[in-house]
Length: 231
Ligand SMILES: [Zn+2]
Image (cartoon, rainbow, N blue to C red; front, side, top):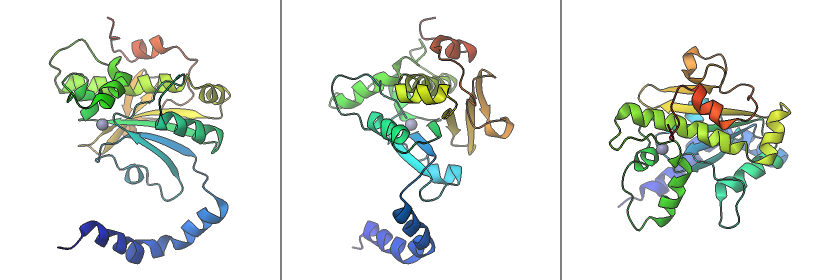
């Protein structure tokens, strides 16, 4: 039986790599200098390079279940996403951080449902999105979509708790972008803090929040016209 994965690796080397050889060599010689940290959900239907038209060396990628940002302040545990944020900002000096969620997100749906008992890490991880849920037991598509969007804003807020992120955002050296990718439409809706919600990229005048307003989590959730979980 042919090993399909092995076939794909060989095909990459033979068919795809040659056209990128010079580019990769340059990236090796000069080192990587990506301008964008892309924090995306692990969902296989998000293809960041396809979505942004980026090539090798352009995106510093972190993906996890739900596109969540763990708290900066942690006393224990191993948090790959937190480490990646620190590295991207302090060492790579990225200029943009994108948080990209999407429609039909299993992580968001799981916030309203059951998670297998053995998935103890997953249950804990999902806590990072819980604040975005609405007080509805059996959510329909619209509630799920709103929760997905609220979760994205929540992660942007948590990013602002990272001192190196806040410092640079306030100095105008870094911008934060909340994206909600509508898989079935092939369109990203970008969070625009001034318009108070998510706007289809085709109608937006910026690729995200633009200049981030001074940090006040409550205003973001209220400004987006969405009741907070406590309402
Ligand atoms: Zn997802």
